[in-house]
Amino acid sequence: MPSSSLVGAWGEEQAAAYLRRRGYRIEAARYRCRYGEIDLVASRGRFLAFVEVKLRASDAVAKPREYVDFRKQGKIRTTAQYYLSEHPTQLQPRFDVIEIYAPEGVRTRRPVINHMEDAFE
Image 1: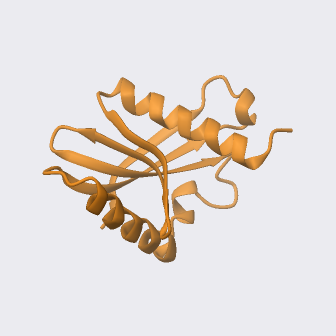
Image 2: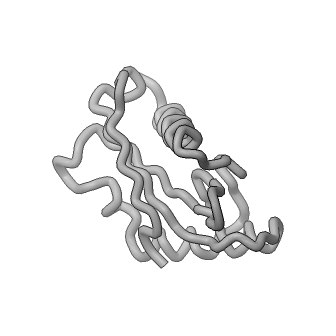
Image 3: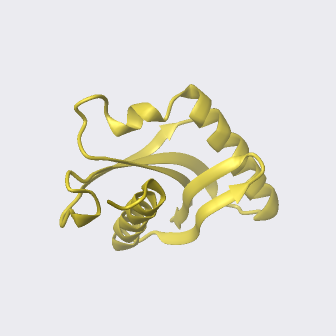
């Protein structure tokens, strides 16, 4: 059984591929600083999306997006501000959440991906 960090990386790769297919450019993956981490930073059009990726086998307990609670949103916001201080841009920032349902983990051939743009402020 793969470790949770390997499964998480697989989920982030799935999300990045999904975004690329929709015309996004991946600016950063697994961005980390002293304030926290952001799974993906992606740009398209006039937006720079800070993307939180949530991978689950199912939504039997809760939908993956529900794990991006108020506390997690605050950490993502602070980390995004730090990212923007290091990478100034004219693009409009926003916060997205990508849910990935992979019932067979990394062996899932066709994970279900839900992309919620502007998921929180």
